[in-house]
Image (cartoon, rainbow, N blue to C red; front, side, top):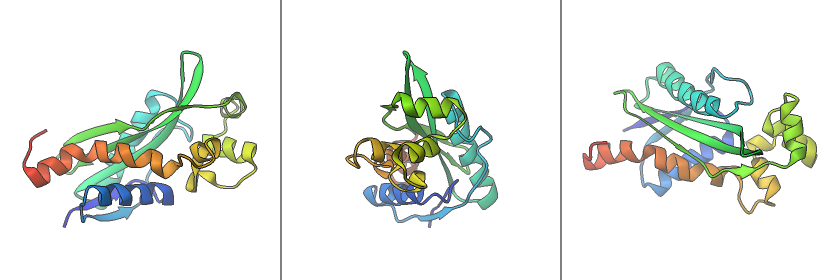
Length: 176
């Protein structure tokens, strides 16, 4: 049995990973362990990739799982607009690495202002929408789209995309 370790205990990330494994019809054991990302609480731009990779590396070291998976949400200023997205990074214990990014979405200026004052996106969302702990539920994207797209939905596709070289190699002996 293949064990995949997720570098988070966030229920949204765990449920998104479970759904991705279900979509792929992979009966792998999943464990979630909180590990350090090595980046700021609210990473910007390239630090999002660094944080996701660090989570994957750290969780595989701590658990000795077959696959380490890190998910890191970040924001970046692109052409004068702040966008949010997530990076999903996977590493096997043999050293195969891959990553994918989620769809991105622009952030309203009210959120950007709070983020630039040092708040995480989740904190900014909670303040603006007068909710609590949205990052463990629908996330900023769910609040902004009235749950047409929620945080879990945003993560499933990049998890599948990050994992494809691993499951193709393991199941179909297709080299990456």
